[in-house]
Length: 139
Ligand code: HEC
Image 1 (cartoon, protein in one colour):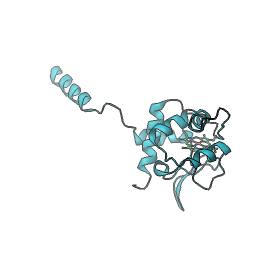
Image 2 (tube, protein in one colour):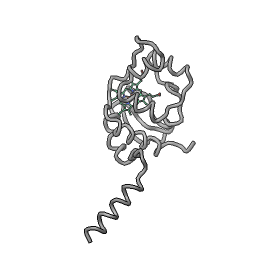
Image 3 (cartoon, helix red, strand yellow):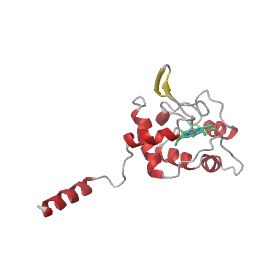
Protein backbone atom coordinates (compact mmCIF):
# COMPACT_ATOMS: atom_id res chain seq x y z
CA UNK A 1 0.00 0.00 0.00
CA UNK A 2 2.67 2.41 1.12
CA UNK A 3 4.87 1.33 -1.76
CA UNK A 4 2.09 1.91 -4.27
CA UNK A 5 1.60 5.45 -2.96
CA UNK A 6 5.30 6.21 -3.22
CA UNK A 7 5.44 4.73 -6.71
CA UNK A 8 2.49 6.89 -7.76
CA UNK A 9 4.16 10.00 -6.33
CA UNK A 10 7.41 9.24 -8.10
CA UNK A 11 5.58 8.86 -11.40
CA UNK A 12 3.83 12.21 -10.84
CA UNK A 13 7.16 13.89 -10.10
CA UNK A 14 8.79 12.41 -13.18
CA UNK A 15 5.88 13.55 -15.32
CA UNK A 16 6.26 17.17 -14.13
CA UNK A 17 8.07 19.44 -16.61
CA UNK A 18 11.69 20.33 -15.81
CA UNK A 19 10.73 23.97 -15.34
CA UNK A 20 7.56 24.51 -13.36
CA UNK A 21 4.95 26.56 -15.19
CA UNK A 22 3.43 29.49 -13.32
CA UNK A 23 0.13 28.91 -11.54
CA UNK A 24 -2.53 31.36 -12.79
CA UNK A 25 -4.76 30.91 -9.70
CA UNK A 26 -1.88 31.73 -7.38
CA UNK A 27 -0.91 34.58 -9.69
CA UNK A 28 -4.39 36.09 -9.38
CA UNK A 29 -3.89 36.23 -5.62
CA UNK A 30 -0.40 37.70 -5.93
CA UNK A 31 -1.77 40.30 -8.36
CA UNK A 32 -3.45 41.92 -5.32
CA UNK A 33 -0.04 43.48 -4.70
CA UNK A 34 -0.11 45.10 -8.13
CA UNK A 35 -3.73 46.29 -7.97
CA UNK A 36 -3.07 49.51 -6.10
CA UNK A 37 -1.40 50.76 -9.31
CA UNK A 38 -2.56 48.48 -12.15
CA UNK A 39 -5.96 47.71 -13.67
CA UNK A 40 -6.53 44.90 -16.18
CA UNK A 41 -9.23 46.08 -18.59
CA UNK A 42 -10.17 45.31 -22.18
CA UNK A 43 -11.83 48.62 -23.02
CA UNK A 44 -14.97 48.78 -20.87
CA UNK A 45 -14.62 45.14 -19.84
CA UNK A 46 -12.79 45.43 -16.51
CA UNK A 47 -11.17 42.12 -15.57
CA UNK A 48 -9.45 43.35 -12.40
CA UNK A 49 -10.18 46.82 -11.15
CA UNK A 50 -7.12 48.60 -9.82
CA UNK A 51 -5.37 51.95 -9.68
CA UNK A 52 -4.11 54.16 -12.48
CA UNK A 53 -0.63 54.92 -11.14
CA UNK A 54 0.68 52.32 -13.60
CA UNK A 55 -0.44 51.24 -17.10
CA UNK A 56 -3.33 48.85 -17.84
CA UNK A 57 -1.83 45.35 -18.02
CA UNK A 58 -4.45 43.81 -20.35
CA UNK A 59 -2.84 41.76 -23.11
CA UNK A 60 0.65 42.35 -21.74
CA UNK A 61 2.04 39.00 -22.95
CA UNK A 62 1.88 40.11 -26.60
CA UNK A 63 2.50 43.81 -26.11
CA UNK A 64 5.60 45.83 -26.88
CA UNK A 65 7.23 47.22 -23.71
CA UNK A 66 5.84 50.66 -22.83
CA UNK A 67 3.28 50.70 -25.64
CA UNK A 68 -0.01 51.86 -24.07
CA UNK A 69 -1.14 55.50 -23.86
CA UNK A 70 0.23 55.65 -20.28
CA UNK A 71 2.73 58.42 -19.53
CA UNK A 72 5.84 56.24 -19.07
CA UNK A 73 9.18 57.26 -17.61
CA UNK A 74 11.71 58.48 -20.19
CA UNK A 75 13.58 55.20 -19.78
CA UNK A 76 10.52 52.98 -20.31
CA UNK A 77 9.65 55.09 -23.38
CA UNK A 78 13.21 54.59 -24.68
CA UNK A 79 12.90 50.82 -24.09
CA UNK A 80 9.66 50.90 -26.08
CA UNK A 81 11.62 52.24 -29.08
CA UNK A 82 13.52 48.93 -29.15
CA UNK A 83 10.22 47.33 -30.14
CA UNK A 84 10.58 44.15 -28.07
CA UNK A 85 7.45 42.33 -26.89
CA UNK A 86 7.19 41.25 -23.27
CA UNK A 87 8.44 37.72 -22.60
CA UNK A 88 8.09 35.80 -19.35
CA UNK A 89 11.82 36.18 -18.73
CA UNK A 90 11.76 39.96 -19.18
CA UNK A 91 8.59 40.25 -17.09
CA UNK A 92 10.21 38.38 -14.17
CA UNK A 93 13.30 40.60 -14.41
CA UNK A 94 11.12 43.73 -14.61
CA UNK A 95 9.04 43.03 -11.50
CA UNK A 96 12.16 42.04 -9.53
CA UNK A 97 13.65 45.48 -10.25
CA UNK A 98 12.22 47.71 -13.00
CA UNK A 99 15.10 50.21 -12.88
CA UNK A 100 17.78 47.50 -13.15
CA UNK A 101 15.82 45.93 -16.00
CA UNK A 102 15.81 49.23 -17.93
CA UNK A 103 19.52 49.85 -17.20
CA UNK A 104 20.39 46.46 -18.70
CA UNK A 105 18.00 46.77 -21.67
CA UNK A 106 19.15 50.27 -22.57
CA UNK A 107 22.77 49.74 -21.54
CA UNK A 108 22.45 53.00 -19.64
CA UNK A 109 23.48 53.13 -15.96
CA UNK A 110 21.34 56.25 -15.44
CA UNK A 111 18.07 54.76 -16.69
CA UNK A 112 15.27 54.85 -14.12
CA UNK A 113 11.75 53.44 -13.96
CA UNK A 114 8.72 55.11 -12.42
CA UNK A 115 7.62 51.79 -10.90
CA UNK A 116 8.85 51.68 -7.30
CA UNK A 117 7.35 48.30 -6.41
CA UNK A 118 9.45 45.09 -6.41
CA UNK A 119 8.29 41.49 -6.53
CA UNK A 120 11.50 39.63 -5.71
CA UNK A 121 10.50 35.97 -5.93
CA UNK A 122 10.75 34.65 -9.49
CA UNK A 123 8.15 31.95 -8.69
CA UNK A 124 5.59 34.57 -7.64
CA UNK A 125 6.35 36.56 -10.79
CA UNK A 126 5.92 33.44 -12.97
CA UNK A 127 2.50 32.91 -11.35
CA UNK A 128 1.47 36.51 -12.13
CA UNK A 129 2.67 36.05 -15.72
CA UNK A 130 0.51 32.89 -16.01
CA UNK A 131 -2.44 34.88 -14.66
CA UNK A 132 -1.89 37.70 -17.19
CA UNK A 133 -1.66 35.10 -19.99
CA UNK A 134 -4.93 33.51 -18.76
CA UNK A 135 -6.86 36.81 -19.02
CA UNK A 136 -5.29 37.92 -22.31
CA UNK A 137 -6.60 37.35 -25.82
CA UNK A 138 -5.05 34.35 -27.54
CA UNK A 139 -2.33 35.52 -29.86
C1 HEC B 1 3.30 51.66 -6.60
C2 HEC B 1 2.68 51.47 -7.89
C3 HEC B 1 2.95 50.16 -8.63
C4 HEC B 1 2.82 48.87 -8.18
C5 HEC B 1 2.39 48.39 -6.78
C6 HEC B 1 3.14 48.01 -9.31
N1 HEC B 1 3.45 48.77 -10.41
FE1 HEC B 1 3.90 48.06 -12.27
N2 HEC B 1 4.15 49.97 -12.95
C7 HEC B 1 3.98 51.12 -12.18
C8 HEC B 1 4.37 52.28 -12.96
C9 HEC B 1 4.34 53.73 -12.50
C10 HEC B 1 4.77 51.79 -14.23
C11 HEC B 1 5.36 52.59 -15.40
C12 HEC B 1 6.87 52.42 -15.31
C13 HEC B 1 7.71 53.43 -16.08
O1 HEC B 1 7.16 54.25 -16.84
O2 HEC B 1 8.95 53.41 -15.89
C14 HEC B 1 4.60 50.34 -14.18
C15 HEC B 1 4.84 49.48 -15.27
C16 HEC B 1 4.66 48.13 -15.25
C17 HEC B 1 4.88 47.24 -16.37
C18 HEC B 1 5.25 47.68 -17.79
C19 HEC B 1 3.96 47.78 -18.58
C20 HEC B 1 4.09 48.16 -20.04
O3 HEC B 1 3.13 48.76 -20.57
O4 HEC B 1 5.10 47.88 -20.69
C21 HEC B 1 4.63 45.99 -15.94
C22 HEC B 1 4.75 44.72 -16.75
C23 HEC B 1 4.25 46.07 -14.54
N3 HEC B 1 4.30 47.39 -14.15
C24 HEC B 1 3.91 44.99 -13.77
C25 HEC B 1 3.59 45.07 -12.41
C26 HEC B 1 3.23 43.91 -11.62
C27 HEC B 1 3.10 42.51 -12.13
C28 HEC B 1 3.04 44.36 -10.33
C29 HEC B 1 2.72 43.54 -9.10
C30 HEC B 1 3.64 42.44 -8.82
C31 HEC B 1 3.25 45.81 -10.35
N4 HEC B 1 3.57 46.18 -11.63
C32 HEC B 1 3.10 46.63 -9.26
C33 HEC B 1 3.55 51.17 -10.88
C34 HEC B 1 3.34 50.08 -10.05
